[in-house]
Image (cartoon, rainbow, N blue to C red; front, side, top):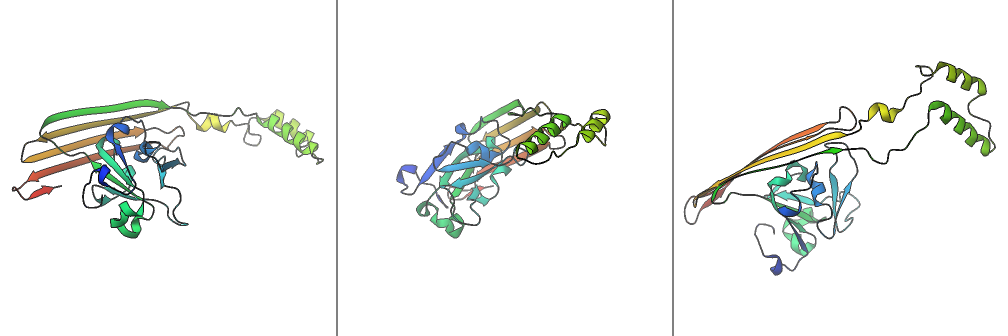
Length: 255
């Protein structure tokens, strides 16, 4: 909380804690979506399905202002976008919801604060690998009619409300004879522009090495997400290097 660490039982303000076990195995492209449904009072809304833009907007206890309602995001004490980090790098997340718990951040905490702590090294040597892969498929795709059926149904709709048909019989005959062509198109744009599925994969390698005096944690992540619509693919590489060194008994350095 702020510049220090406290036990949740000793904090009187409203704080929610999320551990790495709750988010690391979720197959999401953007880290904000891993918070969806894991903390009370926190709402994650996804407004786009495009790879790279499918992160969610975070709202803590609803809307706080008429302007910017985004909370302050702090990763290891540095302000950044939550989607810039890989879920595999996260040790824990604390969400400060009220003025008492977020007071140290001042006006920036008007919409709450999300504190992210990344993993750090420990004694011993450990190497870890985590991955997921899957297919994303379009859902709830409506069956559409062709050009002729569309015009016939449009004429029927116009006639039912007392208007003249929009398309004449002569135009319909010319359309039937000339389709499909540039002048008389009959294109299923859903079938033409969308794939049946899109492949998605994420790979993460972590290395932990540490002694009593020095500890190191390194993480390398690669995420590749194909788009259902062509030319909307997204890929991301994350590299994180956390180190802790005990220079003397009373002086430590962290990077």
